[in-house]
Image 1 (tube, rainbow, N blue to C red):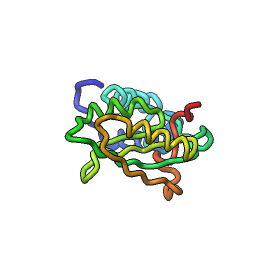
Image 2: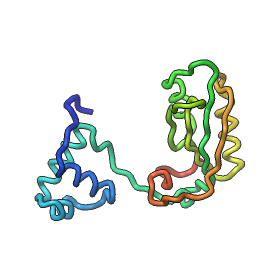
Image 3: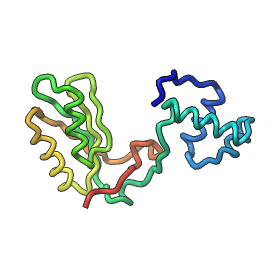
Length: 161
């Protein structure tokens, strides 16, 4: 990411909104909608990428199509004060963890876990619990997505074999 400040104006905001709605929208289509040429839109997108405002473009896929049929959120409680970088090392070792964040409240971290099935989820949970500084976990299984178009409802990579 470039060290320059990541500032943007209303036109940049409209470009970002269009790309968030559909990252495959052409620069010409975006330009027509906001009153810029395709070239001007491209220059702005390039600048937004260079400054780190736009961090990438992703396809969102129905998780079950990729083999992820079970989903849960797992609260992680650590012994003592586990530093976030140590937690990050652990979660990177589990491809089933779709997202992870440190949180306020009783838990130290919250993990979004996808698995092939309940048995696979249990195996993932056992691997997470095997970490020496993990004191306990509390899991909540996802039954359905109330906002099916949200990023959390999609998957970015297939289930491991």
